[in-house]
Image (cartoon, rainbow, N blue to C red; front, side):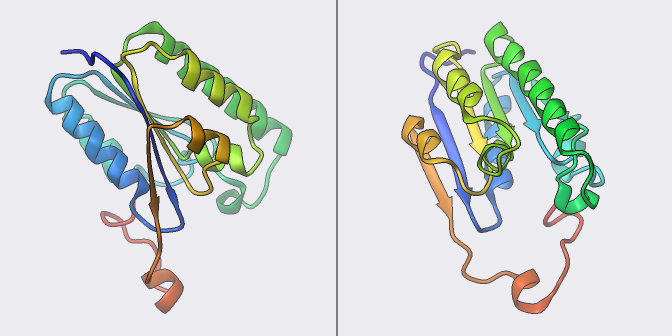
Length: 178
């Protein structure tokens, strides 16, 4: 199965659920025989996520976790090296998208990458514009830039009403938040 027309989704906002929603869509697509790439930026420093673990059991679903760690979790580090690594990883994803090897591509946390200045917005906008017409593209992360929102077909903003970390100091829990 392939898609006749690929659209662009943005899942953004300050609440939990952006990656979860994108992974649900990825599983649905894989369940219908679509080839899915789920590329995770800034999640290389945490233990393997539940979605990466289960993805190995789902035909047609590939998770690509990059080694970068957000400075918030790594205690800093060399900013120039991190930017170069992100640029290299994004170029790798771009090559995969343009190859036509995947029908659905999720760029998990890419909105954070761009909005926090770790990568210029131009390459992301170019990918949105130049992707094959039948590739569905899903972009997650807080603070989606206005230009990305404008280029999208679907935009969902998750709004936090209550959260146990902010309200009660309960840390992220394996199997629930990651």
